[in-house]
Length: 322
Image (cartoon, rainbow, N blue to C red; front, side):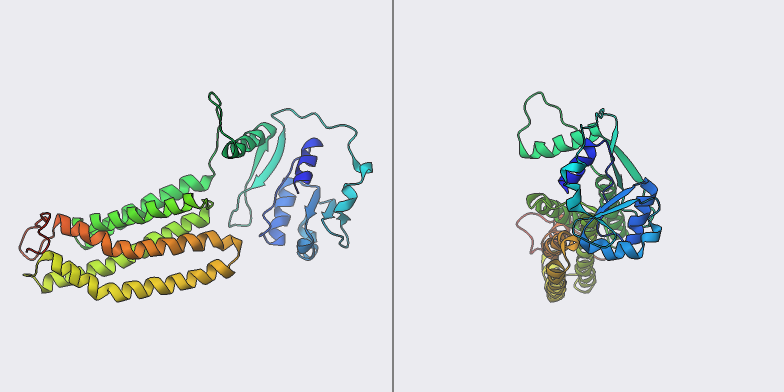
C-alpha cells in the first residue's frame, strides 16, 4: 500500500487511512465525512463494503487489490496509461493525510496532517534507525493516549493509597503504594525492553495490573490486621510471617489461574490482544510476589499500632523481638 500512499502524494491527493477492524458502516462514515471519492481495499473487506454500500455517500470508485465484482482491479492502476504527465507541485502546508480517532461513538473526529508534518513524523521514525547528528533537532508528538494514560495511572495509585490509608493505617498505605510502584516500574521496563506499543490497550493492562496487585495486597493486609488483634504478644515479624503463610496458597493459585487464562488469550486472541495479554501476564507475576515481599517489609520497617500500644518501628537485626 506504500505505492498507493506515495502515488496519492504525487498526485496532490489526500490520503484517508481507515482502521481495518472497523465495521463497514463505520468505514462508510469516515468515507462520507472526509469526502473521499476513491476507496482502495483488500478482497477480505469486499462483501462487507458491498452490504453497506448505500452508506458510502459520495464514493465514486472502488479499487480492490484482487479482482472483485463492481470494483476496479488494482492492477489496472499500474497501467502506464494511468501515469501522471508530471508530479503535482505541493507546498509544505498543503494537506496530505487525514486520519480519524478510534472513537467509541461511531462518529470519530478527523485530524489533518500537512506534507511538513508527515515529513517530521518520518524523520522521527528514521531517528530510531539512524543516529541523530550533533546540532540536529527532531520533534516528536506523542499520541493523546500517552498523557491520558499517565494521568489515569497516577489517579488510580492516589485513590488506592487513600483507600488503604483509611481502611488500615498509614503504614499499610505506604506498603501498598510501594508495591504498586514496584509493579509499575518493572512492567514499564518490560514494555520498553520488548518494544511493546504503548496504546490504550497497554494502559488498560497497566490499570488492571494495579487492581490485581492491590487486591492481592489487601488480602494479605486483612489477614495481618486480623492476626495483629489475635496475637497481641507475638513479635511483629512472626505475625507477618504467619499472615503471609496463611494467604500464600490463595495468592499463588489465583495468580497461576489468571496467567493460564491470559496465556490462552495471548496465543489465540490475535495481534490486537497480544500486547495486552503479555503485559498482563508479566504484571500479574510481578504483582503476586510484590504483595508478599514488598508491602509487608514496609510495615515491618515502620511498625504498627497493636491495641493500646503505639507504633514501634523495627530495629534492623531485631525482626523477631516484640
